[in-house]
Picture 1 (cartoon, rainbow, N blue to C red):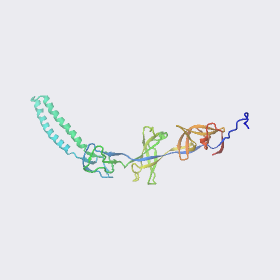
Picture 2: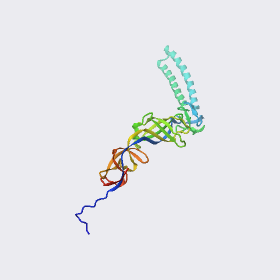
Picture 3: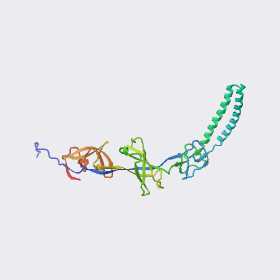
Picture 4: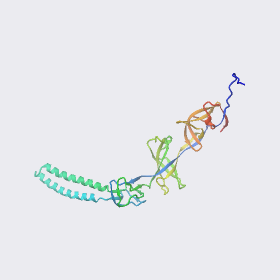
Length: 325
């Protein structure tokens, strides 16, 4: 039998959904991020010039003071050049003194004397160049610290690209980590942080000393460094750390389950129940944990947030409440 053309369309059955009432909660603004232990200062030790190692004073794992001689390159040819210049300078100075007396009595012209004086000055400059070249054959510690592993042996030919060893200031350590950009304004020098590392149950503390001047465009995060307050053999530069930062407590936080947030490009949305219908709201979010996420804008206390069947909803769809949490 054909359908009655004058009959009203069948009533669409409302979708049954579960909901919760958005209510302020107490939220500790804790951030947990990965970090890396760093030496206060660290550097690779390279020679400034190429040459053969004739002396190597690198004792692996030992502490050295700033300026300590770590290695010496062969400088016999340079020393010979310096001795030759010293002899030439001695003769040139004697000649310059004699001509200085002669110019006083007009025995020679001023120009002849000036050339003699120029010869002395040129020899002194050449000697300074040789001395600087000799200095470059000495590889010294740029700062006081602990030496790493030795990568060369006496007699080896090295170049400025050769890494003889590394040196690190491990008496004072730092930790570096990145935080989401939205927390950047809350991070101030002196802010305490805590962290833990694998292999020990200890919790260590540090204080923020500085942050990068700009946000990383790729990760949308801010690099931060903190000075570690403890000294412990377990704290080794390069070690992975779990960093925890407490930024305060928010007693008015609106928290919803992670599952209700619908990503849409760069936007985030959720559905609320209004007058028997599902209505979409664009929101911004904050702190997230394993189950819930903070909603910063888009809803207010007392709104009824739909928590089930969110993938089947569309704006204006008729819904029926099954359970309100």
